[in-house]
Image (cartoon, rainbow, N blue to C red; front, side, top):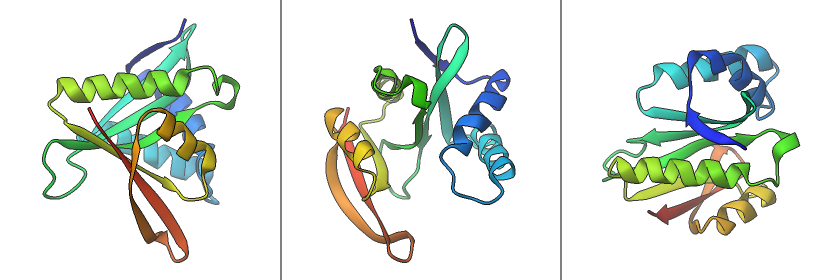
Length: 153
């Protein structure tokens, strides 16, 4: 049985390994460590892990106050389930947990973005009732567009 919980310092090594699978940088280890350090040092982030038998199999990061001028919204900025546990409901479990946490903390709407070529993520978020809101042209770099999705909670 899997469970979701808040991240602890003991999860750093597992998080670094998961983040490395999401990056395309040349200095994967160094970049992943910097990303994970930011998870623990940035007070805007709330990080959750999903585990089974005390093994971290995925994580999600909810960012509060992510948009200047926004009122009671948050953003899912990272979501990853290891390949071995994909299609077993872990991603959905993480999303539902983060939505409940956000709701309990007076968040009314959650946003997320994904690359327009990430069809698996797009389908996954639509299945979780997230709705398309915008296409951001050249968002990450020239020629790379992103979709923004959102859900009222």
